[in-house]
Length: 112
Length: 113
Image (cartoon, rainbow over the protein chains, first blue to last red):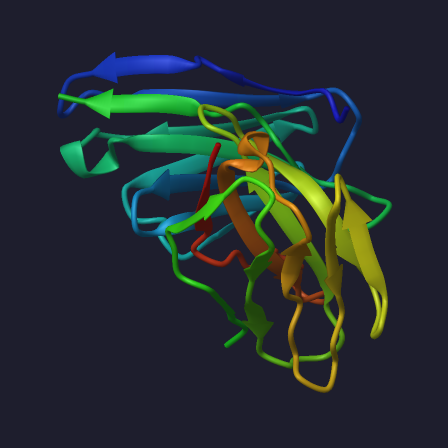
């Protein structure tokens, strides 16, 4: 168990409000990722991080920002939430041993 | 760019039927290959993996063989159970640079009793 937790598990927010999702890991993994999962689209990478203060964009980064001020926390922020950002968000870490991923349990976000 | 093509679903089978879910990837270098499974309401979890050509990954009765010549990593199970109902994702890891997993779109499997 990579000790990865996401918070909150569920959130409902209004259009135009800022939202921050948190991913926390306890095993000092260097690489962390944020994905969104939507019907018909599978998993799409939003942003990822390869170290403290080192982040890069994924394929669907518009409308999202991230921060990683310490190894254990990777934050995803929706600056001004829109209905198109209603989704399930998953955080993942990359395992050192085999380069596979371990995923968090997900955050279900609804923008109304 | 790097990509993976996964058999489209949904797939519906009866219990004890044979399962194959096809997966092919673009041959950039020598990626490690993974299958992930997502049970309803949960996150993805690793099902099996293979790290070099001709390796066979196996877990919970599922198998997949790394076929470099056909750039494929098809998932198989000889006798599915109702509890295998889930979404299955194929994912090659193209190492180097950003080292990101590229996920297929997922194949939803429903097994009926």
